[in-house]
Picture: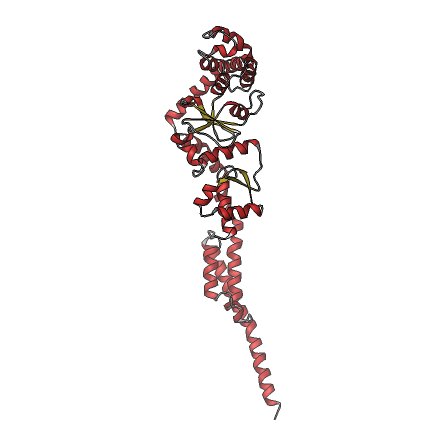
Length: 370
């Protein structure tokens, strides 16, 4: 495979998954490892992590490294295949401090890349850590911004609590999540049911935990109360709108309800047009047609002049069919025919002296040599 073909193929792979591709995906596409390394040396692609490459236009970041590591866990599969398959997407879920960083909650010191996996596995890379656990479907989601499977905010805080993080750190996480509307108080209480001791309380002290985290959700409660007040104030207006719309939807379709007024308005706009087409001034077109017919029949006009454009019979038929027709009374028709006959006779009279002069001139020319 030529270099430009390999570059085009690998660039297409990268465009489908955050600007990244794996060496296994490249091999499946027909690009072997030596060719890939040559492209890397030429600066066409950059190696992000072991077995994962990025196009030169891809912006390198901590999140990109996380995506590269996630791709390397199933290097032969495209990201879309793993995300769309429920049996594959939960194989490796971003969790713990890495999940907190992606959710942008807390201020924890980064300690590598963490995944929760459903089977035991190890990594040769020291900055990658796996946590074995069976996650319920409610414990993880696909992150809306990064597109990676990640533990939910309640599950993330619970994992960090069980990993030994101090209560102050946990409260900071809860406060950030509550302020960003990523977590409700009820979700937190349900997640830590039986794990209240993580906050320095007695196990099972739900009321104590509620009192402890209550102030973390003051803004959330205020927003909820405001939303309820707005909904309550808008309810009468909503009921009135429903009362107005319901009869319309029952008797008429929206299409008919919208078309009827529109058709009436259009009819008013175009109503003057038919009457304007019948005004007397329009007779000028018929007069113009007659004049052009007369001109076409004059003998002084070169015959080729009109025949090159239209033969007289074709011109007459075109003019009579294309120009607007007007109603002419019988007396007017008779007057027009009389005028036409008179003009034709005058044209013949004018043409006769010219022909006589031409013939006389020809005779004189023939007699001069004698």
